[in-house]
Length: 312
Image (cartoon, rainbow, N blue to C red; front, side, top):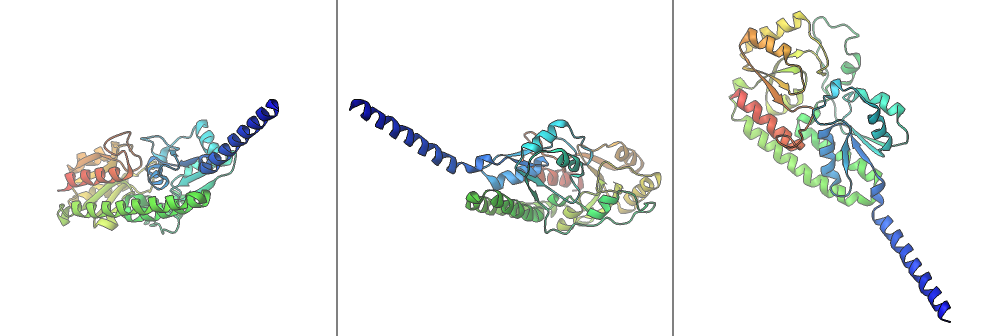
């Protein structure tokens, strides 16, 4: 009788353990999701939507320039392990196509810029039909430099995460609403800072065509770009450099702005000809590991502070 009783106890214990294990699995079903974003700033935006429920990793490391990024075998492994992949879109991640072709498994791809209409590049003298053909067709991908457009990023990421993990829907909705409110606060802060710059000095000369959305939102004029391209991995002709020099002289633009990952050789050459300042500290493509741009919002505040300092 004692043996029968002990057998019953063992069976009940095993059943309880099995039920506990099943319950634990159902509560953490989202743990099977591996979320990967193409860049550090996208990973930060997505993490704010995911909250504590998911961890979002970045494919590109800090300080990488997506325009000139050289892929590695480790990148294929990262993508193969992902079940959700978040991209900016508009040909920004042109490097990722061969990686996706070689990556195993299936994944949900979220395009952060979905439903947004990109700026198209203006024609430049001396360009041929083959020059940056894909880039011309796709348009300007740098929409994240306008926080109002990032609201759509957040909505697209929210909807994608809900599709991948329906049980977390309420969490993703609440987190997205909170973060959108923070983006609206960032927009108001930027407007206040820009108001401290005299209207006639709200002039931008950049290395490549990256700040169009920012300029449009906050009332800046793009005087010219050194590289007539949406990519920093481009080149400029002698004629185009001469045109930039003339544009700076005629407009009175006080500075040339580059991100810290861009080659500043041409900018320094133009600065010698025009006597303007070269600002090489902007964070346009990547966050920093810690201050001053550890998050997307901190990145935007840092960039605006650098612009204000140079243009006031």
